Length: 379
Ligand SMILES: Cc1cc2nc3c(=O)[nH]c(=O)nc-3n(C[C@H](O)[C@H](O)[C@H](O)COP(=O)(O)OP(=O)(O)OC[C@H]3O[C@@H](n4cnc5c(N)ncnc54)[C@H](O)[C@@H]3O)c2cc1C
Image (cartoon, rainbow, N blue to C red):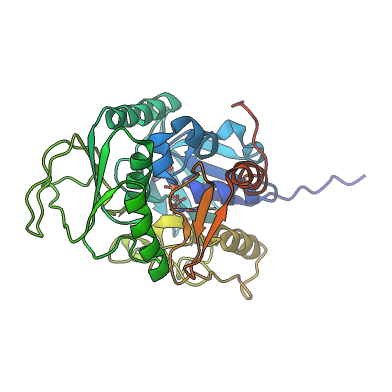
């Protein structure tokens, strides 16, 4: 009898296991040898900061998931560490693990999903579960003790934080933003709606305020000093200041400059592939896919998964294309007592009643369909 021929499964390195890296890794795990590299031992989503700050136990159920709970990650090689170099010519990356010496890993395909630093809630520091818990709790305690809170920044995060804190009560919440209406990049109807909504939820909104950031400060911590305004108003003092000013910094220092745009985001073509590199893809907040860098929420992971599979089979034509939406969309305020409101790219709003949102969307859809099944506890 002839010996069975075993075909080597191609190795796909997924850099960063956040919202998008996890989706790619869970999809490719069956057909490929996936090596997932993550600075944390858990998915710590950057989504829904507002509910994280006001209802941490509820937020954790959906947005903080130790990797051991993902059934579909059972077969991947998880490396808790940070990629420090990617040599795209030799298809090799170098990782510094949380413990032990640096390792080099060769890949057949490379997916970059390392995200961005933004405020205090998104970063690329190495963390374990204990330090994640400590920092989540410390921020929430500081905000719970404040009687005046200033939120600086009128994007989706600032709006979500201000509205959730105001609804919780216990503090007067001020939202400062530099334009006429919050939510630049959203449909005009959504922008008008949010002004009404913030007012009715008790947020004091201050348009036309452009804050001066202290020298060298990127907004990555709560502060207590008075806020100065380059737009000319008197300084404002609050017990806690949340900075949500969108000073994003892409996590790409391990990549050669020729694959980055002027701001350091990863260049990609319509297939979310790095130009000139047939087996390197990027998605999520780190990828310069469209002006809004929206491939995380516009199903970019499906494009990357299909195209990685195609390229590994040797196909070069008919790759799937990424289709960005013209306006930002998504859930702005998170799950509330009256349900979950999702704003659409066309400006419409869909409100999903709370029991359905909890059971069908955050339960069945996210946990079963999106993540492919979660265990109740960590392994
Ligand atoms: C299905 C879906 C729905 C969404 N819906 C909404 C919505 O309704 N509202 C909304 O506001 N947003 C929504 N988002 C988008 C979300 O706000 C962000 O765009 C998303 O969190 C970005 O994901 P990411 O994977 O790019 O980055 P992250 O989730 O930040 O993951 C990056 C990870 O890479 C790690 N990392 C960084 N550098 C390295 C390194 N050198 N080596 C190893 N690891 C590294 C980081 O520490 C981090 O863990 C949605 C996203 C998805 C996927």
